[in-house]
Amino acid sequence: MNRTPRRPEAPTDLSLFSLAIEDAAGPALLLDADLRIVHVTPGAERLLGESVPLGVLAPKALCGAAVDRPIAEALAAGRAVTGLVHRPVAGGGERVLRVRANPLLGARDERVGWLLLVDEERREEGDARAPVLFHGMWTMDPSMKRVFHVIERAARRDASVLVRGETGSGKELVARAIHALSPRAKGPFVAINCSALPATLLESELFGHVKGAFTGAVRDNVGLFRAANKGTIFLDEIAEVPVELQAKLLRVLETRTVLPVGGREAISVDVRVVAATHQSLRTAVERGTFRADLMYRLRVVPIFLPPLRMRSGDVGLVAQRLIEELNEGGGRRVARLAPGALAAMQRYPWPGNIRELRNALEYAYVVGEGPVLNEGELPAEIVDPGLAGDGAGIVVSAPPAPAPEDPTKSPEVQRIERALERVGGNRERAAQVLGMSRVTLWRRMKALGMADE
Ligand SMILES: Nc1ncnc2c1ncn2[C@@H]1O[C@H](COP(=O)(O)OP(=O)(O)OP(=O)(O)O)[C@@H](O)[C@H]1O
Ligand SMILES: [Mg+2]
Image 1 (cartoon, rainbow, N blue to C red):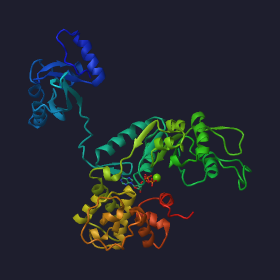
Image 2: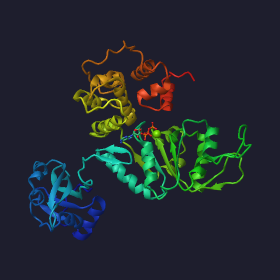
Image 3: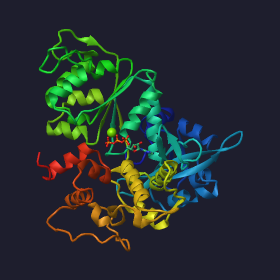
Image 4: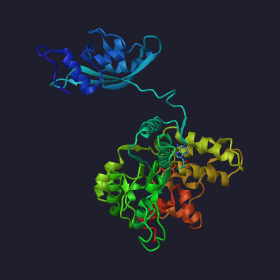
């Protein structure tokens, strides 16, 4: 934005000027230093719903409703501000506009005017904070609702989707939702975890092999790409695909054909690809462990799933829904969460996200009884944030006494050790307790120097 004041002798083809502002910044109003409206672009006029007389004070013209006072006051005080204003709409109802007021500064940093950018506040359907259930995913968080909107739009097209999210945040549910909402819904949905297999095995799993291709290949195997024909293939933990296989995967995506291991002829496949990763592919590219060209093929539509701790209101909501589900299972019937239990859950950072939340509740069903789910029935690391690594750091009264800690060990190492101890060294169950997959636990243990293999 040009920061010098408009001089009176400057060319004044206002329609051109208007178009230029709208093109660069969207619908806008220009005010002078005294907050008088000196110009309104056509888009802003449409949004405001009536022609705005020039020369009037902007706070008065725009902020009619009492609720709009904060923005009027900020303007009067000369502060840059973003806020909502409410405009009546012809025929009843009102429209909510988001107004961003930016001061325009002159050569000596004095305020010579204001640029007010206006756009319509997109309201979520119904109440923005209302709980919704979308293909198995509960949420009341606006950013998750936007994710659902992107899923709906992306599903209709055949573009490759890359879902990024922490472990247990719902990546597989997203992939299934995309499939279910797509024109391929009647076709197969095939999922594979790319981190679980060594390169050679993964190649034959994905692309198939012909009989005799290697020792043990006693019959032809069509492979998952062909098994997913007319449907969707879900490539989970895509960042873990060994580099030597990435070129082959890229070729499959480019040519839409697969070459089975030991085969001579490429076979056409009609498959939509949804991939998922818990880590940034871009970082993997920078580290040289992932091909940039493959990343661009896969992330035509990137979807970022926020972690549970960033979804406002969701810990309580999802816990409630999971409790209803667990009640169905017979055994204990929980009528409500004790306030202390809810508070502890809201403080906890949930590194294992919804899966960890579900496991924590299942744990409470096993160790506790009665209609009220109490704080003391939750796994120790949830009640005592000190055990949960770099968690919230708030000490809650009466946690089960933790074992003396070894200050030379990182909190994550201690947490994993404690989980292993609690389940007698069984990694499968330790992973469940920690709310992560067995593979993730193994990967973390390896990274922390705790795994011997
Ligand atoms: N918003 C939600 N509401 C209710 N349940 C959910 C929600 N999101 C995920 N879940 C449940 O949480 C568990 C984990 O979800 P999912 O397997 O899709 O996560 P993921 O991101 O694929 O995990 P991982 O990285 O470990 O593979 C599943 O049991 C799923 O049904
Ligand atoms: Mg998964």
